[in-house]
Image 1 (cartoon, one colour):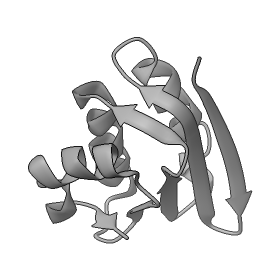
Image 2 (cartoon, one colour):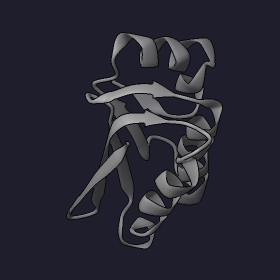
Image 3 (spheres, rainbow, N blue to C red):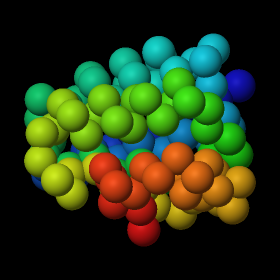
Length: 99
């Protein structure tokens, strides 16, 4: 079971999924992110406890970047090696900041 911890500090939303983001729970992931988008200018995805992300999860990252509408608004931090490989292979760094 995947959980999504969410915190808002000022204009920054941080989402920390624990487990995997896949086709089964990507809509829940999307909903958790979208609940606070109107209040923030930056979204940080802390992937320290996320073991896997599917293409459905990647779509949520890209949709978040599109919704915020400014370069550098979406950040991925602490990605584990398997998740980092997916981010690298898909060249997601062209659209979001990977730290």
